[in-house]
Image (cartoon, rainbow, N blue to C red; front, side, top):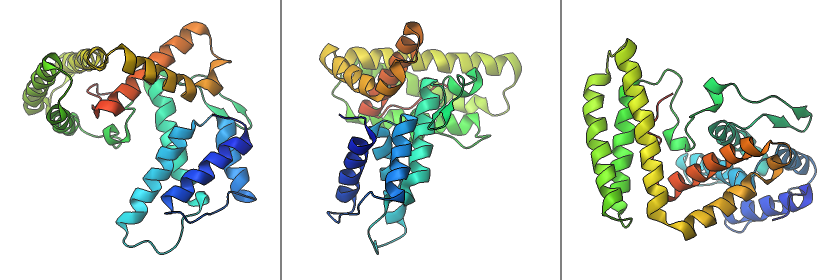
Length: 249
C-alpha cells in the first residue's frame, strides 16, 4: 500500500465513496491538505478508516442520511482513533511540524486498544469489570477456538464477576492486588488467544501490524520496535476475537 500523500488520499477517497454508498466526494483542495496531514502524522490507513466508520455510525444514529459526508467532517474522529491507537501501543507523538518525545508511561502503557473498552475519565472499577464480563460472555458465545480457550474465558468471567461485587470501596493494598490480578488475567487471555488462533493467523496479523507501523519503524530502536510490534499484534488479536482489555489503568 503506498504511503505517499497522493496514494493515501486516493485510498481515503475510495473508502469515503463506499461509505457514501457510491457517491463520489473528491478529496481535493483543503480536503487534500487535511488528509495529507494525516499521512504526515503516520496515521495508518486502517486507523483512518476506523475513524471514518466512527463518524458514520454517529451520523446514522441521528436519523436518515440527508447528504453525502465530506472527509473534513471525519477529522476529529480520525484523530481520536489515532490517538487511542498510538497510546495503546506507547508510540511517540508525531505531527507534520515535528515529533515529540515518547509518551509518559502513565499515558502510553496499558491503555485500551479498542474504543469499546475506553472509559470516561474517572470511570469506576466496578463499571469496568461489568463491561469486561459482558464482552467476555459475548466472546465465549462466538466459540470455535477450542475448549481450553473457552474454559479460560469462563474462569476469567467468573473471577471478574466475583471481583466486581467486592471492588466498590476497595482501597490501598487490596485494590492494588486486584489491579495486578487484572493485568495478569489480561496477559493470560491474550497469550491463550494467540495460541488458539494458530501460527498462520498470527503471521497474518504480524504482517498487518508491520504495515500499520511502517511509518514509525525507521526512527525506533530495535528493542522499542519489537515491544510496540507485540502490542500492535495483541491489539489485532483482540479485535479479531472481540476480546476486552481486562487490565484497568
